[in-house]
Length: 260
Image 1 (tube, rainbow, N blue to C red):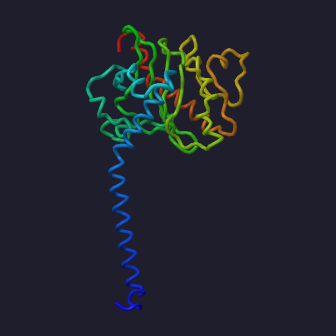
Image 2: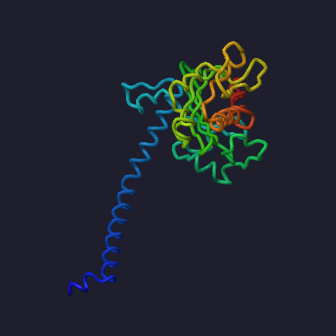
Image 3: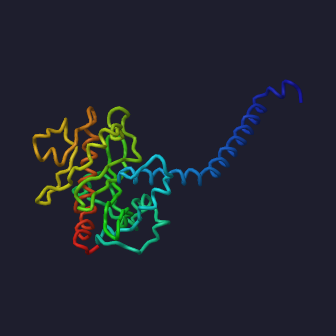
């Protein structure tokens, strides 16, 4: 082959194609081989966030070891009862929430968290001591400014007092809505009440700082995120949806009554 043939457009295209083919094969093989590791890391991260929401996360122990105190159970969202209908180990809740056969489409009047569909079954996480409930950790999600925020709310045994709130996935603006990850802001939720003495939902992110001299604000609200009104509203909406009658409220009420 002459030098002119090597430099021809046709030959250059062939070489480029061969390089692209080899690179694509390498990337594909890497993606397939790394998928189990990525999946395992994701599960560890979720467990870490569950522990953090429950106030149980420690730096000196492995996540799996710490997670041994937590029991994963399934709740039928349509009845508010515990369920053994599905295999917890294989159940993919995110996939179920998008499947019309495993979820229900929400009307605009119900969908205050903008999640579109509610799965028929949800995993929940329980910490017990001597057979008695200590902490209940519930998965929550809702739309902020740019993304669906996914996280966990942990409640004390009274099923009203918040132990912690945290998000493991979102794409809110760093420095603004992204402040939902700020430890100082998350700490504000500790001890807040979901409902007032009459059973009315009061938990919320206030627009601006909370006035501690006003009892309803001091007991139920946290400071708003500066410059992130839509994210703040999104957090309020997701809490009120998931803790409300269209979310976990039927389950919470049955659990309180010992009927779940």
